[in-house]
Image (tube, rainbow, N blue to C red; front, side, top):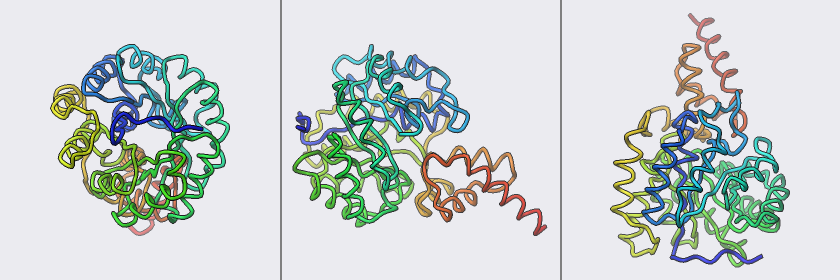
Amino acid sequence: MTRPELTHDVRVVDTTLRDGSHAMAHRFTEAQVRDTVRALDAAGLEWIEVSHGDGIGGSSFNYGFSGTDEMTLISAAAEEARDARIAVLLVPGIGTVDDLKRAHDAGARMVRVATHCTEADISPQYFAAARELGMETVGFLMMAHRVGPKDLARQARIMVDAGCECPYVTDSAGALLMHEALERFEALVDEVGDEAWVGYHGHQNLSMGVANSVLARDAGVRYFDGSLCALGAGSGNSPTEVLAAVFDRLGVGTGLDVPALLAAAEEVVRPYLPRWPKMDRNAIVQGWAGVYSSFLLHAERAAERYGVPAHEILRRCGELGYVGGQEDMIIDVAVRLAAGERESA
């Protein structure tokens, strides 16, 4: 396996139209996707991720139904992209190989296979299928704060041996402090850096996404995720426009047009935001307690339904160690908290 050639010092992948789907309650319209892809393409993005927030196949009762069929959105994105290419997320157990083939037919050329940080062994069949389709392959080790650097590196090794060209330190909860993130970057680069690139996906729940990206680059990480206006789960992702500006100030080549990205954020994405991702109490609790960022809207809905604070639901989810795929357990937590409040009244 040969890792892809980089055309610049680092590669920024924009995930506005995938991780941003969480903040949009999976209601992206085809027009919004087309407008966003055109703006990102013009700003120099090489890869743009498009799919349901929980990946292809994610439109469901548990995770939230898509407002527009995701294959329609992927196809629209591929039609609008002149130089950029389209990536999709696939979470084993949610998406299938058949979903991957459909996404490829719709125009996707990269798959990012996302597993919990201790479950890389469920990814090989998806990497094999993607390689047969000629797609580039990325692996997300989600909730990377939940295991130590050496264990995370061993999981990255499983992915690379299965055909992954770039395993990611994926800080799904926005929980990694700078020294914790650096230890994981160094461990992955030491383990697989001669064979594959290493990536970083950050969230802003503790305001560490961009700072950790700077550390990551110095440690040898070369793929970075961002979203315009930080649009994403929890308090949002590392903002693409900020990453581009910071790397530019550092003299790190990205191939990105900073003014064009600022315009894309302000003039294209901001007008359709239903809510601006922010570090409010709920989002900060997610980073502090190590809670999967996509739990935010689910917890807020449960809080309204059962009359208990969302931040208490999230904190309890952190104590219980819930991970992506266990969104249905949020209701159970809310019911138990509500019952406890009634008993103490």
